Length: 175
Image (tube, rainbow, N blue to C red):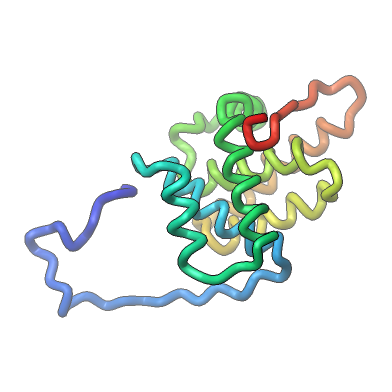
């Protein structure tokens, strides 16, 4: 239901609304912070007509982040969007019983981010990438998100370590 505003409803009265602010624990590392922002960008791009550059600028403008965090946010977002068809086909191989267009938007984008990192970030441990994706699922996902994300990424990682398994090749930032 991305893009639908409750305030557009004729029966909505802002004075009657109760607002719940959910506080998330601070990110443990700069890369964790970058992944959180990148996920928010990917989510918005996936469920709206907003331009990638505008969404990145808006999210990065919400709080002051170190330049290397901003750079990593851009690297992830640009890498995922440049490789989206390959990422989706690869993910679908490991979640064949769940058509990606029916997977929750947040879960779909956590998987895209995780698979992109598994393919593009050869210097980052597979365990770290999966743990980070699980943290994102825990923070932003629904009740079953954590198990779903862990299961899909775990299966991908297990096959990647097997001999003669086809590897996903991605380009970084569309290059």
